[in-house]
Image 1 (cartoon, helix red, strand yellow):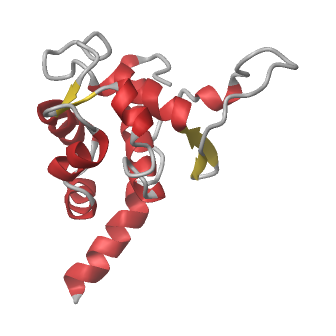
Image 2 (tube, rainbow, N blue to C red):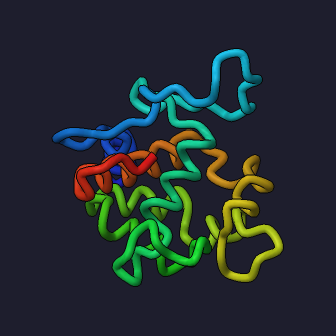
Length: 158
């Protein structure tokens, strides 16, 4: 019983924002006025918009290439090793536990990879958006990773 209460508390804490400066792209206007806006899912995480565009930018700028030590400069394919490395570097121990119980790396790949074998691309992520990170709590966990990476990199990542 205590473990379930602990996990519920950890889930609430896992979507809290990191200390220090955080770079957010929701202050940037996208597109030109009068242009039709791209349809996107606009979820809210702690009062800040984190939709499809921000999600893809974050994944490519933080997770892609993290295993090789060059985040954002990878091969444009997200592997299981890259997902695990991002989780281990940017989530606290109690957040890792909740993240693993909520959605495993294997499940993320299954939901997001489409026809690819063992990796996620921008195209496969976009095509499988209804199943890939479909839960808003998972999206907020990704936002937490991105916000912490932005502080470490001292630059916006989405």
